[in-house]
Image (cartoon, rainbow, N blue to C red; front, side, top):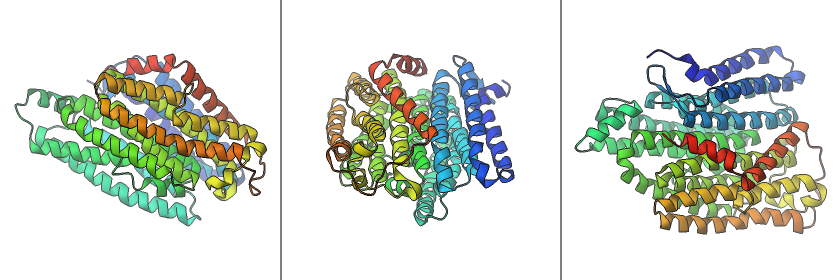
Amino acid sequence: MDLEYTTLLPEIILSLSGILLMMSAPMVDRERQHSLGYPALLGIGTAFAATVVQWGLSGEGFYGMVFQDSFSQLCKLLFLFSAAAITLSAMSYLEREKLLHGEFFALLSFATVGMCLMASSADLILTFLGLEILSVSTYILVAFREKDPKSTESALKYFILGAFSTAFLLYGIAFIYGATGTTRYTQVADFLSSASFYPLALALGLALIAVGFGFKAAVTPFHVWTPDVYEGAPLPIAMHLAVSSKAAALVALLRIFYQMLPDLSQQWEGMLSISAVLTMAVGNIAALTQTNIKRMLAYSSIAHAGYLLVGFCANNASGVQAMLFYLFAYALMNVGAFTVIQVMARDNERFLSISDFRGTARRHPYLSAALASFLVSLAGIPATAGFMGKLFMFAAAIESQHYTLVVIALLASAVGLYYYLRVIVLMYMWEPSDILEPAPVPLSAKIVIAIMIIGTFYLGIYPKPILDLASEAAIF
């Protein structure tokens, strides 16, 4: 078995792109920094093309440390698509806020490298390495508005709590290694299938790993950092936290539990079922009382992590297929919603109160219609990607006879309708706010919003293309 560098070709391309962006940033005048977004998009696009070319290939690389399969390739496509959308959306934001572009795009590229490594990892050590590449890059990005005290405070909170979660994860890896003598997914699975009893250290390792990834995915009770960090982070990075970072944590956890610990499924199904119920309840109930739209979407993201755990607990191929489809739908809805809010918030993110959106349908008819479409999809209304995602998720759980979990998820979705529709009612049924005058919409934001709207309704009406890819990727 040789190194097989081609198994990590997208990661290598992104790493080189990030290094070149970091090196070239000091040589570009501040007035022309926005032009660095185009090489960043070129790097992401090249990595995307490399992933597409590799579709259908299977095997291992780097002495069995890396999987090459449809699951990792589809996840990489999701991360690269999200990174491209965030990069395009951030170009006008960074120019408006007078922030350095080169460092931002380089760090976002490195964060995407970490996520791709987590999706293709076949060893707990490489999974940890990918998580740290993602985490360190994101810590810096959260603090990117260095003159804003909220941004610095959010980054500090995220860093401190992230360090705790990393410690839990490392302890979990150590316990699993101590119990089995290996950190390789397939070797741990072989040990468990032949063991007559399961050591206590293995159970502790399972619980600690769930805690570590639970923090990154913002599932209850490890969600407390989420609203404060989202509120203080720059809007493109709040978008990254809500979509890409959360997806990477869930994908890595899916790999570990489904491929490494299938013989312990009874234990982790029960643990994750409880977490799913708590996550849906806390996310939806807390979102009802929010007055800041970033905090509302933060609690919304917690609730959606709970819905994803419902599919996770199904513990079947349909559940994995539904999760992968839902992650694509969730990316479309959230990237679109955050991009609209980014435009409406103006410079220094001044207008983020939900009350600021009163009557915006009269002054921003197209932006308001776009935001309403994304919120309707997040609420799970039919003919949208959000509805189809929930439908597939709950169907997979019913297939596994998790009836109680599905009933709770349906009730939680009904609660979620209120805070999404509240924003739509304010936009369309209230008198316009005096402070939110019409503003020009940058071309990059228009492109992102248009793509996300088309994708949201396309997957809501004709989900087959992504569903077929997810079905192929769900076969481990």
